Amino acid sequence: MRILVTAAGLAGWAVVVATFKGPGVYTPLAIYAGLFAALLLALDRERLATFRPDARAVAIGIAGALVMIAGSYGSFALASSLFPAVHADVAVDYATTNIGGNWAVVPLLVVVIVAEEVIWREALFDPAHPIRSGALSVALYVAVQIGFGSWVVFALAAVCGVLWTIERAYTKSLVAPILTHGIWNLTVLVAFPLI
Image (cartoon, rainbow, N blue to C red; front, top):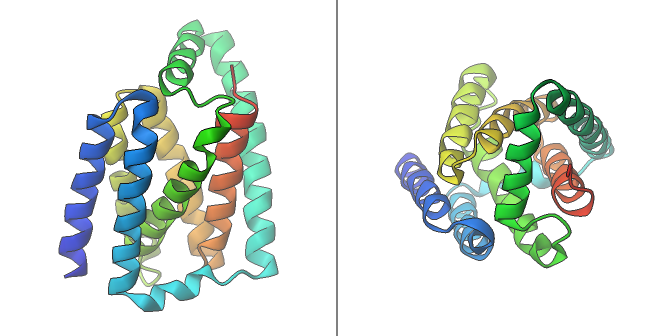
């Protein structure tokens, strides 16, 4: 049952992303993501245990965010200097989504971030088979981002998906990837955009 719900839910996620464009995506995606994640947790309540914070997971989550933030600014500067089109594409993505400096979307982003971790780093992740399930999780995470129509979002989903899945596998907790994902999103997308 959980596999069918997950498959249908992922297809629905892709439809929401493809249907609602630009800043109009935040509310429907947050509602959809929150309901989808809640349903998955209701079907498998044992997975709630991965939300228990411990000092190690919190430290790894914060450290991961700092590394990702530094890496984002550094790699963007380098990529932009080598390939000026990167700068233009990222500028279009920020303008299209109206996310830079838009603090009104933060509550919606938090819902989506937690839901993404529940779905891709918990429901689709099997600690008994971390490499196989992690690869599938990342591939599906990237696949549902295609609806955004941006190669930058697609590439970021691949890199971020791998990093957050490694955190989940290493800490055996959702706390680290939720912290890294959240801090990175709020810093690079909202508070201090790359452009």
